[in-house]
Amino acid sequence: MILYHGSNTTINDIDLNKCHLYKDFGQAFYLTEDKAQASVIANDRVGMQIRNFRMGFIDMKEFMRRLHYMKGITYQWAFCTEKAIKYLERI
Image (cartoon, rainbow, N blue to C red; front, top):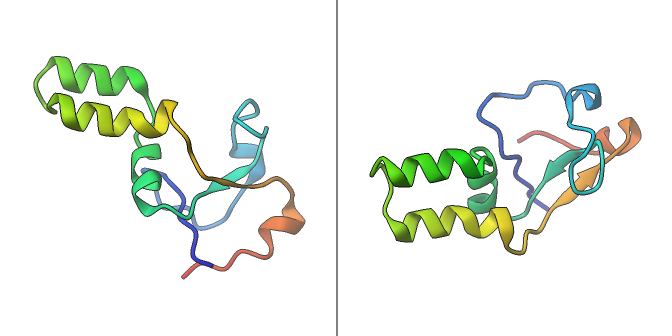
């Protein structure tokens, strides 16, 4: 199975201590099967998308596409322990 992580930086080593405590399933390393969803999550700030739209950087269609994953259904895998993370292989 190929999973994607939405990030704006390269992650060489997964450190759960750097993961946010209050995400959907708690402190975890989150992945998704949907590459498009991962790219949107990398910019997972509603306020940023509102500014992009208001400043004319994106049109309404793109604005709604980006918000889809922020408020709509998302498919994600949460790796919550070091033991679970050891099963991941970067390709």
